[in-house]
Length: 77
Ligand SMILES: [Zn+2]
View 1 (cartoon, rainbow, N blue to C red):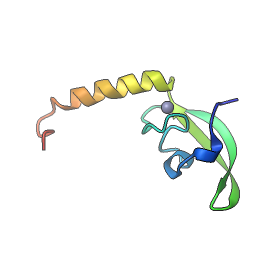
View 2: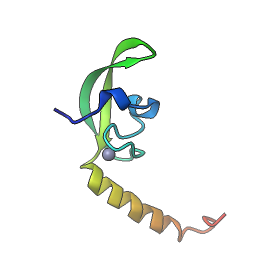
View 3: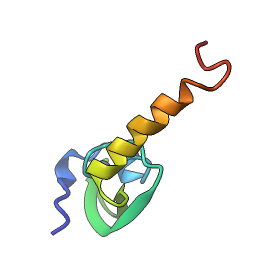
């Protein structure tokens, strides 16, 4: 339903740091609900998260943020 490939989730995705759909670092997120996954051979229930409002828009915003960062003093180091 949510389009998540549970078999290919990595650690940060399972822990809610990265988008469960596109693996981007999450800054604004939305819940995909609780999913049962296999972690270290054990079935566990984890809440998965994805980019908000959607992966495409979030990626565009991240690009804009990166560009604006280059104008910060001291960023070039
Ligand atoms: Zn995403």
